[in-house]
Length: 102
Image (tube, rainbow, N blue to C red; front, side, top):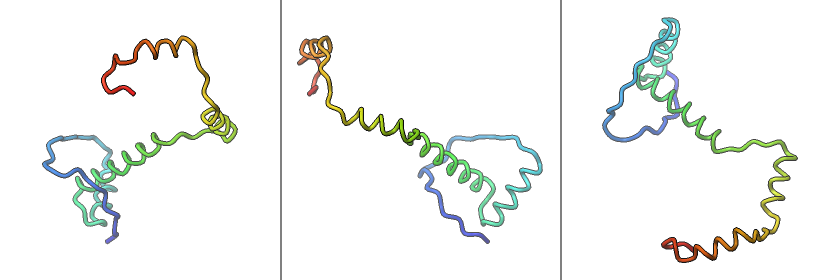
């Protein structure tokens, strides 16, 4: 048997249900892989889907920019701010309008 790193699943009762269609050859691969890992097919499929979801979430949290673009972005963020007269007036006019605004 192969040892797999366990994926954190959501605790509690499983109430959602998904059905999927697949080719027989894919079904056989999944069945064999699940057996090799000692998991039920449903658990194997759920863990595979959760791992993929985790990968997508991690990629969405990253911003990949070319080096020059990233350097320009860092410089813009580090640069001192500019006062925009209309915006400064709007800020003063809105003071006290929003609760807990600071």
